[in-house]
Image (cartoon, rainbow, N blue to C red):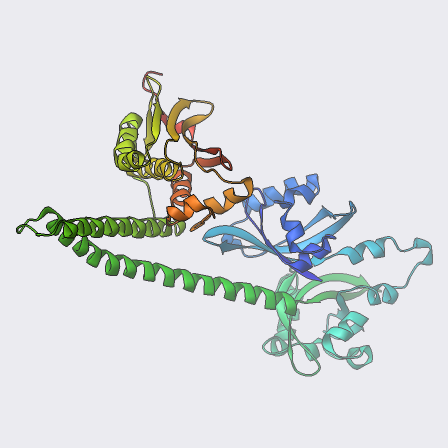
Length: 489
């Protein structure tokens, strides 16, 4: 049984696991093991420290790394695990891909009654891996049942034959070269190494992707080699499928970026013209229009064009953040000044909703090291959301403070329609739209909260949302304490 798991470096956060991997550990399916959050909780403590040290010293250029460690199954029992890990890119971030094999059969061998003193052939024939023994001339001396199944030959057909019978080209022609090189120097392309991938040849001529480990021993004074082989065809199929999926995702991502770049040009150009001409008509620059209704229509055209331009800007900004293309232009930011700008930009929305506004800024507030336009965008988005989803006559507000132990905090609150606890993840998801009469009355892009969250995270901060249906919402934007610029201190 083979399994695949993808984890984040450092904390081993689970990013992906297949059902086979989950069943090895006694779980019903991948969803159950993913609910653990991290693999750290099931790896033996002593092994975990060793593996993390090994991970830190492993460079991507070093190639795959083989590991063995102890894990705890869902029922509390322990078992040995062997896996091969390699670095990959997972949604633009570095991650570790581990292809694993269940080593539970080794426990069964260890627990076999010692008094029965089973023969070597009996042990080899009860091992799940394919095992064979050859002499230094390359003659096959033994061939267990698993090897018979893997290669399609009966033991009697291969014992006494040269090992090249099981090797495709170019290994078939170069086999003796490998053996001679090892006998002279102790190293070769295949012999004298740990598990490595190569190909075998089935009786029917088909190629078998496999993993081979060879160890040397002396039997009755004769130099003998023991080869343990695993058919990794399924693993290769999974790896190829994963690689193909990642390639397709990358192609789709490039297509999305190209589309958004094209959309930016193709939509913004006519929108600027629409907004400009509607401004000319509204202001009657070339003479009176004559009918007052036309002036109102021109104003509506301008407002709609500006709304659509802002929507396109949000989509493009979110795309840049997600693709890692958006950077920060940082400086010391006067927070009260940014909040004043935010109030000015949302004044019309607040006035239209007949809302009371409270601003709480403590005296002596330090500066914030941040990207000023992006901070302004975040606070304006959050404050506009508060005003948008608060019924006429309601209250909205913003308060801020800075402390070395908690960071630079902004809280935007309202007495609006709020949302149920289960709806919060949806509100923070891109293009998320919640049901409700008020929300349908004020349609939006569904990008205000997600974009604000990602812009704060770009600063190393976090965004938290607390809400209760019918009672309002509190959004807390937290910037790390190292961004506080307290000159007095």
